[in-house]
Image (cartoon, rainbow, N blue to C red; front, side, top):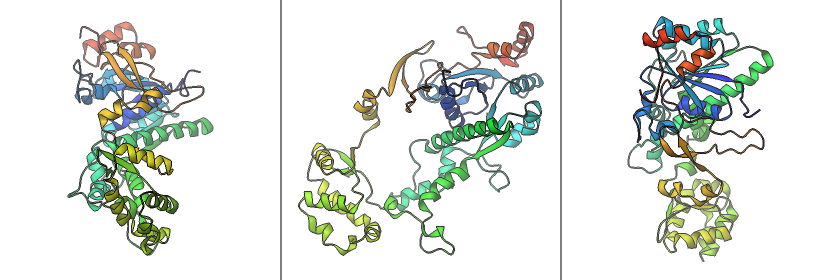
Length: 403
């Protein structure tokens, strides 16, 4: 058994980032992921820098370990292709609105009638039944809806800001993958498939409120919302003489050791604002502000050495170029260089987890749109003449190096 999910077939009708990121993880675990694309391919193929059209580095970063079938699902013949695939699959994942799947004739009723054991997984923007259920959902919109931009403002930014990376899509991808794995385990025990909805808004609301519900966790409320330490305006990387350091004295003994090491024990040990853990949390912004002034006195390397001597968690503040050249990532083999059949030499991120037996890894390079269309249709019983007819009718598209 080469992969934990060897033998599992996933039909991936998702696009952009959330769903494809989930299925890449599952593909690296050995699942046979078939990426179902429109005839022109997933539009995110053109996002970012590329050597050739439709194969940007960003797109290839979360679409490896998959095969691609380019098919017009709006045509009757395309729907028939899809339903014949459904009969062979364990999971169908989509991220369009459910009514769009119904219009295609690929709603849960139609799909489960063909294959009662299938997991029909919707990576949705909003849960069904609420006033938002028909709205479009993208990373920035879900950040906005769940309060993330306002947290930047409450923590001291001049105005609300979006997180400058698609954090929602990445978090949601892991949630989608986890729900698929849970559904597969349930089916193994019961023998039954089921419909699973994984809504972005509700899932991210759970994450945000898990940290910031505060006193509102009680009925009636016993205090304000918000995790005070996370919202402290002075919670930021500390400027040193030549750069920035992230440091986190967390427990009372760590704070005491820090101030003693810099010859200012009285600032912490003798101040009643920090006499108990509860008072320390209440006044943590003042603590951070005092540390910020002291940090200007030494270099980054000096501080890192002292923090490690004091057993206080710390880390240099890296830029993205720094991260690419990070010595720890190099030592653990985080990157590997691979040769893509058409896109040349690539820097590829390995699966971060380490397994003693069925190690996840890239099973195949990211495909061109429709690269395996013919192969996949042959697997589900289409004759050569039938495939040629579908190609001639623009129901499917087969990529070739000359196309």
